[in-house]
Length: 392
Image (cartoon, rainbow, N blue to C red; front, side, top):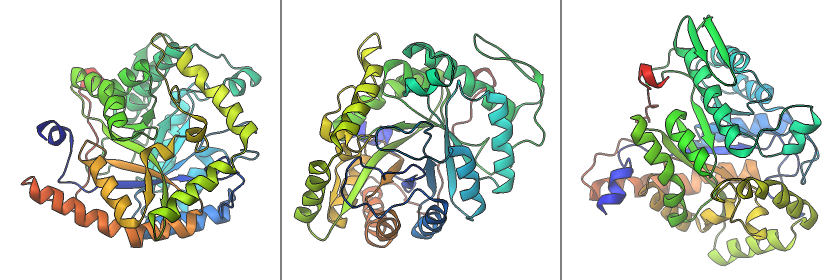
């Protein structure tokens, strides 16, 4: 129990995010009915439903080429900006690839989005996994660990340009010389700059996340798998004197009975688009195979896991609202600060999450805090780790 409490923040409420379906085909690669659309009108309504339901974040996906069931895609940063303009409270995280953006250009773009939204813009840095998108664009495709060298430089440039005047940085991939971006990002209490999210299961990814990320996103994992997955991040962060927060992906199937929820999962997998799932598996499992120690995103994922392409079934948010809420709080006790969720039918199921699951989560959080002798503040916020000057 002492180990559990040492990594958990029981005083602050869990935060919830949802995957923005700006990519066609829904969030499972299956022919099962998904009352979800990739168009902007659907997503604008969904964003407003989500912020009314108690969600604080939304994450826009980055895809360029039609592949693996995603026949159509909207670009993530512009789509995120439109959602920010359509909402009042929701923070929208745009996924971006180093190698497709210059960090200075992205830093300026996010500052503008931040001012338009009064301080609600954020980024998720994706080091890469669809090799064909880079190669067919004529862009350099770096080997696995080298992509994280570039990513770390990229994030340091972002943070430096957002927090300093006359910022300079000399590195292998980026050289910034005495550059100032004006205006600076919006001054939000407790937030030193727009939040930087980052994911990756490999040893290189975990070490990079600990040194430079504000939030570490984990693919779906069971309880033990999550602890194992973030151990490297925590070790790297401790060495750097930093305190990143942790997010976990999960596919939510809430039904009146556990049997009904399990039957829905079974139907999703039975109706999987096998060629698309297998093609995706072949593309992404190259990442794990290319690392020195064989660890990487999706390296241990089965066919069933990959029907939800961020391993969302592994988290097992499947059952009645009570069962799902109980499992969510068990993850909180081992250090999860945010759940990144996805659904078959986004608009109605996001709304139902807010009415049927979230109130139970808050009751269980308060109870867990009380039992641990901690004051639970449902209105408190999680401060972003502020780097030392040397750590920029």
